[in-house]
Length: 284
Length: 252
Image (cartoon, rainbow over all chains, first blue to last red; front, side, top):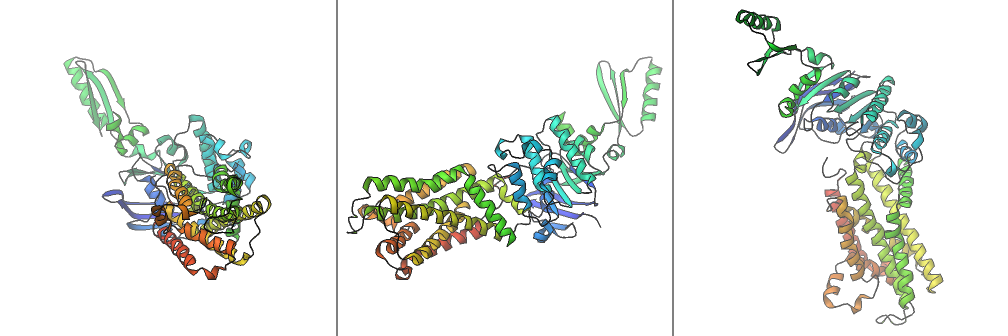
């Protein structure tokens, strides 16, 4: 049985259709990435799966239950990291974890959680004195303390410096090796590439591509040919690079001129992503 | 039940940790009682002959304590927790909403009980005010009042949009209410328009109820009008809360 099943999910806010009939499945033990720019519908989707929002249409099952109708029993098995950190500023790290541990029947031992999120040195530090990255790690700790089967991570590393991101990635990898199922949203392509077994790319509420991160580039993407002619840059996109190149070079040879600055290249994963999400035009 | 106990312990720890709550809602009524009591505690009340001002003030400060802890403190704390996302976060845990609300209410009732005990002991030792004899009635009246003000405090959170606005809105309501309802001075010397406002405020009736019991040896059953008005106001708060209480911050 899959951990998450979503079929034709729809959600609107007034006239804005935030999610327009998306479907996907997440297998148990899998790290699944919802990838897309801000406003693509990632958080709306995740918050429906977490039971925060009501859907307008479609079917949703999370650990075999409809989250819209789920109760305390179901919450024993899920862990949630929201997009923004929220906790009691006046408590220490250990106290915060203890408070949350008390909500679950079988919490994970405190020391294990502290170690898992790398806050051993900060155990007795008040939350308000933690750095942004440390708060985020405590956030993750609070989501893990109930020893959930399924963990939702909504943009876990947004705003991190590169070192903090690498450390967070390590932690998330170690969760995966504990056999947890993870649904992760991110707008960083490299994060999805590093962590996710499979991704779905969201754009304006629709899934525009899905699969293993490496497969996204393979899907019928055009090859780009660039050269300069009379000082002007010429860019060609083609599905048949061999033929296009042959014609181009034959013509140039016949006319006895050089194709200046000739480049033939496949798009990088980054470019595929940007073209899928429609950010390429905006970003130039 | 296990969750309720755990959350109550959490709430009491959070209450004890919060300097703002400790000072503005818990200590301030005690400090004001000592200050005002020292200034005019030995005078007698003009329109209540034979009653010492300090005794009169003690009942008023119990009323002030009730709104500052249950109404003002609770409303500010809940808005801050809502806007910072703590409430939203708690909704993702197995802690049921009823257990959370019950634990929060109980912790504020406990804080108020400690406050009342401090005021009565201070009155006894500083100003020679006797411990009231109708303790059963007093306890019932105080419980009714503190629960009603908690209800109003929770209802008020629905009308406050942001964490920044919380203390401003709450202070703008509860400080004038404390003054007009006669926490600090007898309202009888107030001009007519202030008395007209006082006549609709729940605190006026709560203080009158407490004074009736503490000063005149009445029982809570002798004052059904006051009990009815306080209960009605509490219900208004609960109704607004049920209709409009939010667990999630405004945006995001």
